[in-house]
Every structure is written in structure tokens, then in C-alpha cells.
Image (cartoon, rainbow, N blue to C red; front, side, top):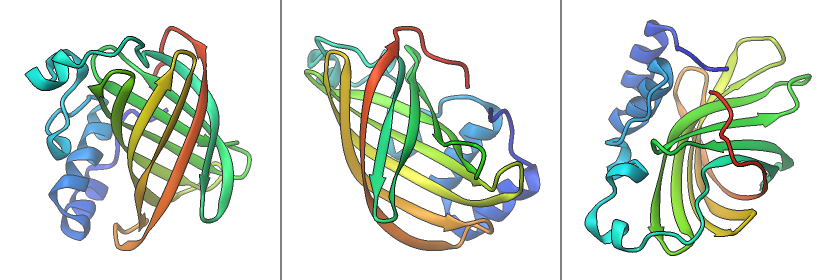
Length: 179
């Protein structure tokens, strides 16, 4: 899993992509949730308006399912932690895939948002790019559906394109997986 990103890569991303994306990359590099990313707040420190709209369900736990985007669909695993951190894994690993970290926060009854920096790699190979995942989610007890726009960057941090993505997952454990 992701524990750190090379400091030179952090600097390269900073120059190419900008502060918001770098803040998310930094979160991944030190394995911490960064509440300041795009105004996001961990669930424990949500603003008064979000705190008053507490969910009847909580996404805390491990989830598996699919992500659909312009290039097709693939497997995805999400782990939501009580601290407001979220971890993401995509692909099957044999042909490559992605891993990422970010933050989630409640937005209303059975709704929440999450933002993740996903690092894409070839199978046991180099980084091929990054995805700035930004999703709005609805939870129905043991299922979560979310959608949003992902910004896609190459390995050097150059913006390539934005794409719509839809995630559908089912809870597989009430305990989140490690990142």
C-alpha cells in the first residue's frame, strides 16, 4: 500500500499541478488525512451544518465493487475510517492499478463526499499517472453509490483530461482496511 511518495515527485507535482493536488499528494506521502484539501473536513471535525445533518448510516468500513468511466469499468475497494481518512485501491494488480488516500466528510442524512489522490502504476512497474478523484455519495445501509468528475494527470503531473466516474460498492466489513 501507499506509505510515501518520493520527495522529488512531490516537488514535480507541486510545479505541474498546483497546490490543491499537491496537498492531496502530500497526504498520501505521509499517510495522513489532510482536512484542508479543497475545504474538506474529517467527519470528526465537520462544520456545524454538516454535524447537524448526521447520517443514519456511516460509511466507516471496507467496501468493494466497481467504478465505471469513459474507458469502461474496473474493480475498486474503498476503506472509510472514523478519522475522516479514505483509502482506495483499483484494478486487479496483474495488469496494474491504482492506490490512493484522501478524506471523506458527511454532507447530510446518508450522504457524504470524498476526495482521493489515486496513484496509477503498471503491474509492478513505474507510476503512470495520477487521478484526482472527487465524488458525492449516497449510502443505503450496505451499499454506496457515488459519482463525480475525476481529473487525470500523467506521471509528470501534466493535466490530461477530466472524466465522469460512477462508483457502486457493497460493504464487506465494518472495520476499514489498512492503507
